[in-house]
Each structure stands twice: as structure tokens, then as C-alpha cells.
Amino acid sequence: MMLHMKQLIRQILLIIGTVAILMSLSFCGGKQSDESKSIAEDKNAEKFDTKAGEKDAQFVVDGISESYAEMLLAGAAVEKSKDQEVKDVAALLKKEYANSLSDLKKFASAKAISVPTEATDEDRKKVQDISSEKEFDKVWCGEMRERHRKMIDELENAATSLNDSELKAWAGKTLTLVRAHHDKIMACHERLK
Image (tube, rainbow, N blue to C red; front, side):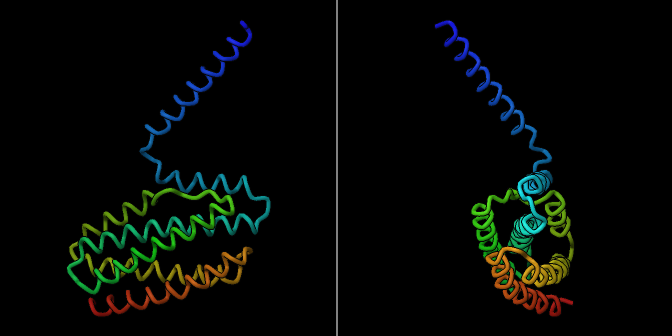
């Protein structure tokens, strides 16, 4: 009876200690957004035994991180833009990157890939900086143009070099959407010059 009581007390203390650690971690959330991506990358480096598996996981982490950033940037344009065409493009981007985020999260879940849970501090700062610009629409279009050029390059590479066939197909499908986004952004950019 005494042995059972000691085991019960140990279990209770273990639970209390675990709860205390989890609570302290949740209150130290000041740098969580930057750490979210880094933590996901570290976990994936530990999980995947092959370079191909790590490369696929990194592509998913980067895609999710970029989706969070694109949604923030698009949301800023929906709110701040004075140009209806920019607002319309931003609303489309916000919706389609939400879909992209959902697709990548489902894929990650099925493949046990750790992913970030929010945008990085760097991306949040970028949105803040652009939002405070006097010529918001021009600056926003310039930023989005550069991001989409980079995404096109990354997706073209991913569509041929990733290991997972489902992920390759997703990259190919998404490449078509990103090119269409880029064309719409370029049209706004040229008009606003």
C-alpha cells in the first residue's frame, strides 16, 4: 500500500512538473514566430534519414512559411490599398495562399513533417514596413513581384527535383497559379509606375 502511494505521488509530481514546463514555455512566446520555422526545420532534420526526405520536408516548411507571409501581405493590401485592382488581386492571393497553406499542412501531417505555425518576425516586419509606406500600392506590387519571381524559380526547380511524386505534382500545379498571380501583379505594377 505504501509503495503504491509513493508511485502515485511520483506520477502526480511528474504531471505537475510537465504542466509547469509547458506553461512557462507558453509565457515565453516573444520570439515564437522566428523559432517556429527553426524548430520545424530542426525536428525534420532529426526525423528524416535521407537527404531526399529532408529536402522534401524543407520545401514544405518553406512553402508554409511563404504562405503565411503572402497571406499577411495580401491582407495588408486588402485593408490599405486605395487601388481597387490591387485590392482585388490581394483578395485573390489571400484566398489562394490559404488554400495552399491548407494543402501543404495536410501533406505535412500525412508525412509526419514538422511545420511552422505562423509567419516569421522578418515577414511581419516587412508587412509593417510596407504598410507604413506613403506609396503603399507601388511598394506592395514591387515586393509581391519579387516574391513571385523567386517562387516561380523555386517551384520550377521543385517540380523536377523533389523526391515525393505527390509533392512534385503539387509544385507543378502551384507553379501555374503562381505564374498567373505574377501576371496580375505585373499588370498592376506597370499601371502604377
